[in-house]
Length: 482
Image 1 (cartoon, rainbow, N blue to C red):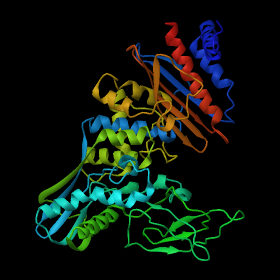
Image 2 (image 1 turned 45 degrees about the horizontal axis):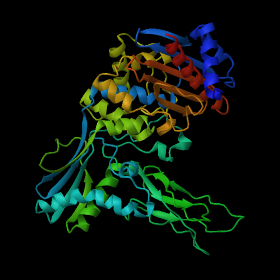
Image 3 (image 1 turned 135 degrees about the vertical axis):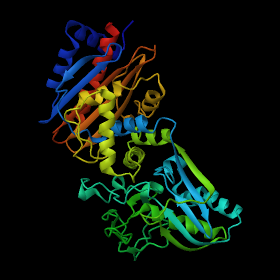
Image 4 (image 1 turned 90 degrees about the vertical axis):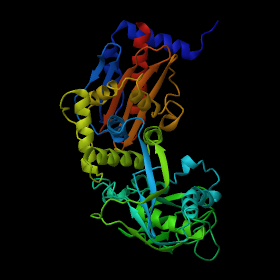
């Protein structure tokens, strides 16, 4: 019987590693990988023994990119716990209604709502607000003097100062607020209109109170391409749609809006009016006002596991930043901020690992900031500190992507680990490629944890990704030998 090609490769790999040691094999993999002037750091730990089985530049302080989300979610589980639930409340206080935010990043998330037909997006968003309006109606409310928005769970610094200025209007740099809505972006669906400006389509959410200037062109034909984009004046929602539209856009073009809490407040006011409840004004609660109180009419609840999964499996930045600021608010009893959140993350890592961690400098929650620094040794030891058979560890592992899913959907296609599954977080920034996580064995054997980060890679990170997968495979083979 002829062995399949993969089986031959597997056997040869086992023999090769058996002839040498795993450390030497890993060093060879790194040395023979074209990292385009980059540097690799590697740490692999066998949690069955607590021993480090691979260490290469393990103490070097590296930019982690989205592997920063592992630090954030680990700290969130440590401080908030796996049973934590976001609770956004609607209160009645006399003739007023108050929305009290809790930093929940999920409300209006089209992925969670399961939207596949974008033409129905507006109606689906309206349906999600219906319970809020119905709760007010059931309370006998017919008019509201002021709809107050209390988003003081977070501060008013919506974006991190070290995020790249040239990307601040991209969806992945959306603002972070005490009340988040629709991932804090507006979806545009432009389509051409012959001889005039393009149509902006039924953008979502429907926000008739914002100003959108249409400065597009609508030239169709093979010699014209689509170049639609939207600019927004700083600290406002005054937008200008620009560029050419030569075909109907059936997928959304995502543009961050300003002040998400007030966007939600005005959207809710519109929903209340649609249900026959007049709303005179919408205002933000002043920072020094007493704590909001009143009769609870409605609570929107979200378990932390949803935020963890969207942060790690899908690598959505807003979720990680909301978790960072929420754990900050919990730890300090003051409005959550990037600075106090990062300090809390560092404190959690030191507490779990029992010592100051050299080269650890958290800056934000998502890894968009290049000011984030961590060693692979610290990251791997942090993962090791979560036992996968306990609630916190189970929640962390469950939040990670696996090959073929989430951000690993195109990873490990040529490398299979029989009897084991990789659960990991990938990360990419310019010149940065990271991969950290667990190898979980089907037979219940204690997992391996790994962290592999390359910095300074000029151009494509394709070879760095192959290197990471080869080291993970070699580590799995080492377990087979024993």
